[in-house]
Image (cartoon, rainbow, N blue to C red; front, top):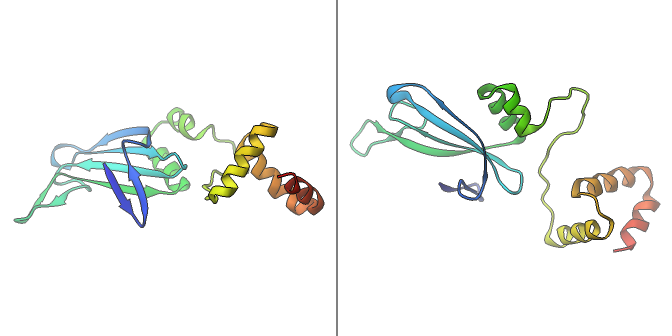
Length: 154
């Protein structure tokens, strides 16, 4: 299914399927699939029968089977997984829970120029995007001179 919501595109054919559940019985039956897009955004694709939360109105009245896409932020996706999956499945998708880990997954949008420069830095120095982004943020506050020296190389 493909759907645009608030200028954002959601496509079940191009996103990665992370988990699938089925709930309810009879006309109340529905299924939900958690997806993650290449940019890190999450969404649910849901399909259900006429008495489910995904039911669609019939032209002549009543309801029929329907489907929908529901965008989720990271915390909502994690909550959905914790409500619908066992602990091992949640850990497989989001990594093991570590109450001492203060890091949080977030989506960052970069300009094409900034993204290309970041990829160039990785090509030259190795590491990951997050390694370099975190280094830049930490060092911006700790040592402005180091940031200027680092930036002047590119």
